[in-house]
Figure 1 (cartoon, rainbow, N blue to C red):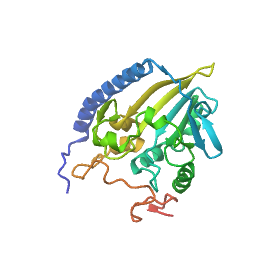
Figure 2: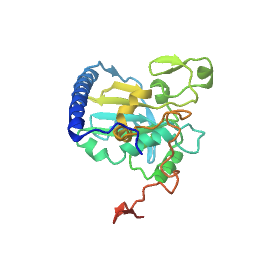
Figure 3: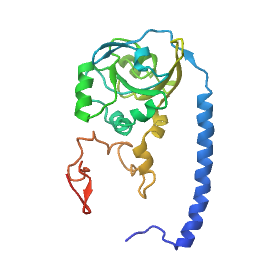
Figure 4: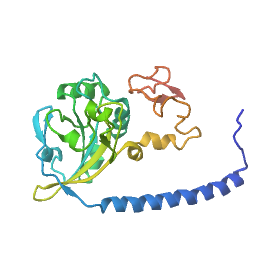
Length: 251
């Protein structure tokens, strides 16, 4: 039996319209914030970054794949780990499959991690992803964009993350960085965001925000304690690949 407030359809419409006004206010604010983001100044990338790709060395310019805009997901994958971060994997589950849409808006999306390329490729195959993934194991990319720290920096509270120094539980951190390549080949860093700033990029979280129980994370040891790699969930509640047929889930 629900304990939630139940009203007539007319009363519900009245309150829904009041909430719609707040939603519209947020939409307008988000539009303004997005315009401000696009108006931020750029920084010229002077360093020459070379990554390890599945077919050999790849430059930062080559990651654009002929387009002028590049989004990099800083995927947490320490060289000593056997599998990628489950939270970063959650984000990629939201990203994979949209590359064709981004490409038609002159955008390339690439994953970058410090783990060896063979390890990344094996994990990519396990997850069933199609997004390109390169290793920054032999360059300073992760350090320069503040998503990898030394143990000493963490212990001294000098891990520079989300634009401030502090402590961090592991040597890797999540983030997103955006770059633009000019017609003369010059590359500029235009934007980076970290921590809760990444929430807006996760469609699954936005869907959970719509349902009555929301993200349902109150009382957990930490906000994402419920999360698993998508092949590590309890079989009894995993969504079968065959979808629904006759009202029942089928494999």
